[in-house]
Length: 170
Image 1 (tube, rainbow, N blue to C red):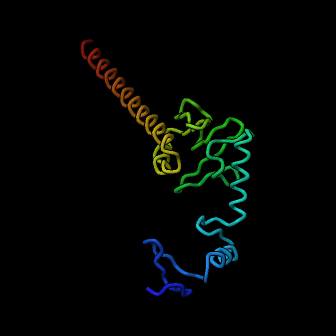
Image 2 (tube, rainbow, N blue to C red):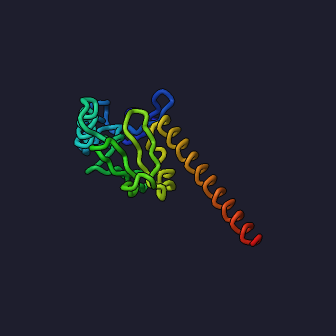
Image 3 (cartoon, rainbow, N blue to C red):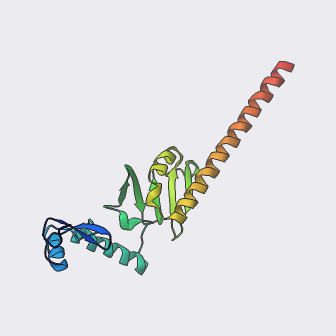
C-alpha cells in the first residue's frame, strides 16, 4: 500500500484511514475548515452547545432527562419525538396530560420518562437512545404494562362469561 500520499489509503496499526495531508495537524485543520470537528460529526458550534447543556445539568439547573440531546426542547430520534419538560424533570412521549393513560418510568440518573400508552411502539423504535440501565427499566415497565392489560382483558372476559351464564339461568 502507498503511504503518506494525500488521497491514498494508509494502514495504521491494522486500521485503514484516508490520508488527507502530511500530518495530523493538517488533517485537523482541514476538518475544522470544513466546519466539523474530526471524529465527532458535529460542528464546533454544536459541540459547544452540547457542552453548555451538560454544564447546566451538572450545576443542578432545571433540566429534563436526556435534554442535552434536545434542540428547542425536543429530541428527535429514529423518527420519534420526545418533549423535554424541565419544570417536572420529565421526558415526554405523546400526550401525557392524563397520567392514567401513561407509562411512567423512573430513570437511572433522575427524572421520569412519561409515555402515552398509545406510543409504546414508538418507544420501542427509540429504545437505543437510552442508557442500558434505562433500557432495562423501560422494558420492565412495558412488560408489566402488557401483563396488566392481559389480566384486565382476562377479567373482562370472565365477567362476560359469568353474565351470559347468569342470563341463561333466568
